[in-house]
Length: 358
Image 1 (cartoon, rainbow, N blue to C red):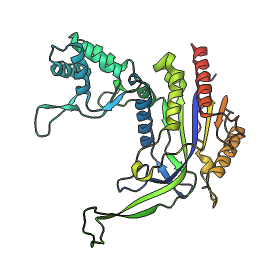
Image 2: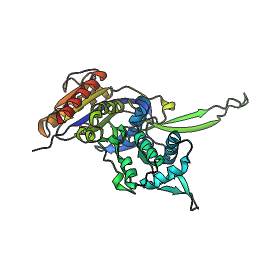
Image 3: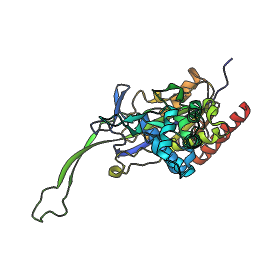
Image 4: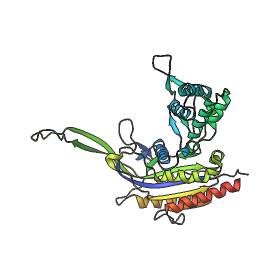
């Protein structure tokens, strides 16, 4: 008998104008070969960062964590609030040593610096717990380890935490985010530009600066999935709200690469959310054969996504328990609703599942 589970699959079609959302080491827009054709690509890391920034701007601070090397600074500030008369730095360093968080030594010196050796994901609640243990002069190292495992932030529970030096501090991610790819072939272009020196003599016709920037434009297929059963182990009664907030953040966020040069922030063309109890399913196969059109890619992309989903559900996988769509042209999969209605319906579905499981 299959164990009860729930997966929330989020599929988004979104067109972006000329832009360079996510660059490689040469400054070119990232690409991938898929179906034998070059596609525009936005890495999952780039979009996950945008989701975390959306969390930070939109939701209370206790729901978002910090991925940083500056743990000592955060801990010092919290200790200063609890015990202004004590040596905050000394207590913070002792607490970090007890927790197994090693500080990187200064280059060419034996003295420890102020940064940990690698980026570390920590929640606001975990910082406060460590500070309280430090002020209380707790000597049990297990207490400090426990503090780092309790009360993860929403984004930590979703994206996980990997600590190579101490796997006992790892969190398995409850969501997966795919690299966004264009539904069609792309041919990157170059923008040749000049900048004028405002203070140059009037008889100087030359440019103050000359350069080129590579860009592309694309209709992107974006996909993410959330394992609700695993997320519930971390967040319990907050699970439904967290799924709604992640879905909103994933749908509405946009990486900020070269945004001032291109002003490329757009709304979505279509949103399709499928709630499943068997496995998450990425529907990128709809675009293995690149869309070809001289009159735009959006409508053709919607049609191929719907047709492919119906084929998958007929031949290879179970039909979703629930389906919710936003955007004209998606009605063949589910009833069309507004984005806000989709988020509310999703929260209610997940809440009902969590309540039943409890």
